Amino acid sequence: MKRVVVLTGGVGGAKLVLGLSHILPQGALTAIVNTGDDFRHLGLHVSPDIDTLLYTLADKANAAQGWGREGESWAFMAALRELGGPDWFALGDGDMALHVLRTHALMQGESLSQVTARFAARWNIPVSILPMSDQPVATMLDTDRGRLEFQRYFVEQRCEPAVRAVQFDGAAQAEPAPGVVDAILSADMILIAPSNPFLSVDPLLAVPALRSALEQTAAPIVAVSPLIGGKAVKGPTAKLMGDLNMAVDNDSIAHHYAGLIDAMLIDSGDRCDAPDIAIAHCATLMTTLSDRMRVAQAAIDLAAGLRG
Amino acid sequence: MKRVVVLTGGVGGAKLVLGLSHILPQGALTAIVNTGDDFRHLGLHVSPDIDTLLYTLADKANAAQGWGREGESWAFMAALRELGGPDWFALGDGDMALHVLRTHALMQGESLSQVTARFAARWNIPVSILPMSDQPVATMLDTDRGRLEFQRYFVEQRCEPAVRAVQFDGAAQAEPAPGVVDAILSADMILIAPSNPFLSVDPLLAVPALRSALEQTAAPIVAVSPLIGGKAVKGPTAKLMGDLNMAVDNDSIAHHYAGLIDAMLIDSGDRCDAPDIAIAHCATLMTTLSDRMRVAQAAIDLAAGLRG
Image (cartoon, rainbow over all chains, first blue to last red):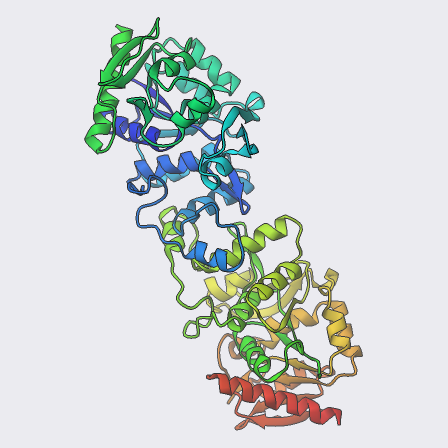
């Protein structure tokens, strides 16, 4: 059985992981997930990217909304507003169960990876989901409105501030979560999901021992580009690249991952002229489950070709 | 303006406080509330008697159910169950807002009385609501199934275990919350709501400086009996009295409060032969708002008569 590791962030990444989970045998896939977006809100430990992946793989995700649970209700938020509580971050009634149970488990000394594994097992998720680290790493943005926590930038300010730099507080001291380094070193291939390279993948790469493992592993590393026709399917990737004075194209993505990746999968209509990496094409827009399986298969085929 | 203090516990007490709030001028009434039922559940600080009073006075209480919010929904509990979380204590979606905001405020160093006052102000509640103490006091029951926290006995085990003794852990070290002693010493009359004397009122009396203030105050103290025809309207009062080998009658209630109360208001059809206290009658079943106002007025009249 080929062992596949995928590095992933939020919604776009979760789509690829879902596609992979449908074409790989049970036990073959490990997802290493960004936790730089994690934050404490009202005393609750919220892990947005882990939750998106859990909901997606458990078939509970709200497809139309792009985050949270399908069929969610909002009585908690209504009551919170009545009491003058902060309402800039939406916490659905069902979603609260994850946050409350996770926060309680962490308070009782369980690690983020342990509680994540417990939720995944409970929902019969056939993918090993590992947070990049059990220690706190906080994605911080230097913007024209000051230094912002990720969720303040992303949710409260809807990515409007111009970003000058991105930092990952705590990353330099963070250890990869148990199993992360082993998964990378024993993988037959490593995929980087089409998540935001600067906000969703870079936090993983900022954890020193995680980056070292990627540099040491013999497995080919293949990135799936988050751009289609010079635009991001969702989220602030394209705007952020503009803020950071990059051309919004695959060459910039390849340059960003230079020295790390062996190949990149890009959309059928796009090009990439980066030297030293292999390029393959595929229709990368993932709307349906079959889209997700197609992109997953193309990424696996690209990686498998590199090994031969 | 006459200043009235009422000592109160859960549902029955909240009904009397609501009646009092309708017949007294704004600012006249202070409710001192049992916190012996408070507990941590899933990391959240739950204050059942304070919440019942807040919901009742804000006209948000679920009248049929007897606890929680009117029009409550239960998506959180459904999701909690899915994840294998404990479901013996029901937390409604809207109700969660109180618990989450309170827990967060306490973590940030606010006191229970400060956060309670903030919620009451937000809902324009015209009653000063004071927790009996800002320090933890835990009502514990020695039963034939072992030593149980109050909520385990009351909710999880539905008051089924036979109670041998009741203790209030922490009470001997607890200080009354700010304002409690002043309110008692400056009151023109003090009422004890028809809450469970052993589980809802005794915790207050177990706080030494609170009990001392009641013993010192010149104001008359009037209890409203929780029994009607030898039965409690709601809750485990009668069963508990049986467990503790008391006759289930007003003489036992009067005996329990002996040395503390000057008078007792009992139901029209009942009697009380306790020496040394005044007795007045009234239909004490509180179904409608006008019932609550009638009982409140009768208690006030009884106390006012004692002063003259």
